[in-house]
Image (cartoon, rainbow, N blue to C red; front, side, top):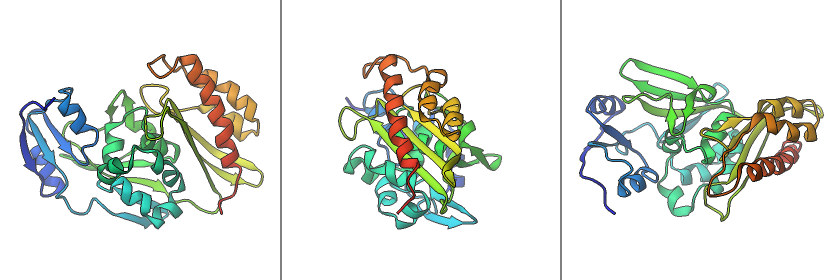
Length: 280
């Protein structure tokens, strides 16, 4: 299929993009790896498509004041190659090879993936696990929204119709940082049936500040808060049992909710072993 007719505009700046978003039924285009597919299937039919790819200053990866800032137009492939990201955000580095295939990673953007908020996607869960925040520009100025407050529902975020996501900010990893990532997918590059992104802080032999962000098990990435508490107490099996309180995945074409809950426990055991290992 081909998309329905739409007008096209190329934004010159973030401010220009915000101005263009004042038109009725306008959508932003970054990498287009999700949007173009929905256009072609006529699941999306905007009146105006606003191309962000000419906007400067949104494609950098910069460390500053204990944080790593990843511009919204950073391509997945760029992030995958970045030594700074691997050092300062090792969880995202672990997740990158699981995102689609090389052709998709060549065009897809970090900001586009987070803003699209597919509940089975890797990056929204990583940002949530890392206690990140999203930098947003809108008609009233700039603001930052914590990841815990950003994902509102199925493909729904804190972004309004005239907002532009400009960057993702996460605390830079230190010597005590521990991360883990794993997912189950039918084929490499497919959306996950169940996935888990996790971060913690090593305190001797204990794990502190545990954050477990599951994807593919609900309408948004979900933190398993009861399991986090059990894992911080050092009881992995109690954490696995606690998932019954934290998760209630629906049946879908991939697997039943019961199977997904079982797989979530398998992933938790695997990821816990990663969290317990010091980085090389």
